[in-house]
Amino acid sequence: MSKKLSLLLPLLASSALAQTVPAAPTVTLSGPAPTPAQAQKLAERLLLSNFGPGSQAEVTYGLPAALPLKLPAPFEVAATVRAKYSGNSNPFYRVFASAPLGASAARDALQAQLTAQGWKMQQSGQPIGFEGNYQPNFLNFYREGSTPFALNANIIGTGGSSNVEIVLNPIGQQQLAQLKKQPNYMPRSSLPLLRALPGSKSAVKYPATGPSGSLSSVWVQTDKAAGEVFNHYSAQLKAAGWKALTDTATGPLRVVTYGLKDLNGREALGTLGIRPWEKDGGYVLTVSVQGFKP
Image 1: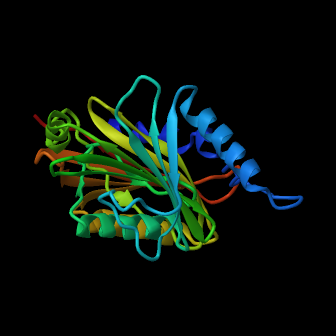
Image 2: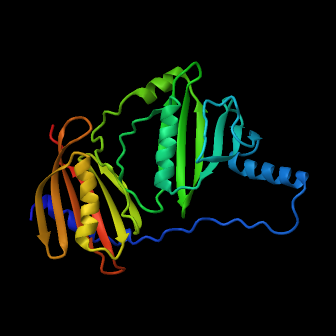
Image 3: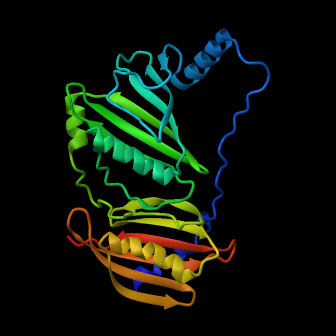
C-alpha cells in the first residue's frame, strides 16, 4: 500500500466520528396568553441578550418591503429584525424563516430563489465534502446595486422541516469588490458536496484543510452493504469529474484513488475510503484532495 493510502487508515478509524447529534431545542408555552405588554417586554429582553445594551432593534412580522429579498413558498417568514449595535451607524437585518423541507432541499430551494432574484453566490473556496443528516447548510451571496448587500444564510434541518436564518448587511463598494474576487490561495478545495445516503443516519466530522489538500469524514449508520454505500458516494465523485485510478482493498478497508483537476486547473489526487465501524455499526468514510502539482 502506498504512503498516501496508509495515511488514511488512522483517519478512517478515528473515534471522533462517533459523535452524538444534539437534539433540536424545544420551546413550550404554558399558562394564559401573554398580554401585549408582556410580549413586548419579552421581545425586548431577548433582543438585548442578542445585541447588547445600547443597541436598537425594530421587528417586522414578515419581510420589510425595502429589502431586496423575497421568500415565496416553500418558505414562511416569521419575522425580520433590523438592528444596530451601540456605536455602529450601519444597520443589519436578521430574517427568521422556516420551510417544510429537509435541510438539503431547503438549501437548494433557497439557492434557486436567490439566484433568480439576482443574488450572486460568493466563492469561498472552502472544503465541502460529506453532508450529514443534521449538518447545518450555509449559503453566502452578495448583491450589486447602489446599495450592495452581503447575505449569509444558515439552514438547519429539524426532522422533515428546516429553520432558516438569513443575515443581510448593507456594504460599501470596496467590500463588494472584495466579495467579487475569486479566492486564489493554496489550496482551493475541490471537495464536492456529497449527499447523504437516503435512509441512513450520518454524523460528519467537519472538513479540514491544509497547505497540501482537504479532507472530510463521515460515520454512516445503515444496514446496507459496504459496496452499496461506497457506490452511492463514488457515483457523486464521478459526476464531479473525478476519474478512478486504483482500487485497493486491505481486509475490510477499501480505498480508491482518483485523478482530478482542482478548481484552479491544477492536477490533484483524490481518495475515497471506507471501512466498517465495529464499535457502533455502520461505516466510516473519508474523502480527500491532496498531492497538488505546481
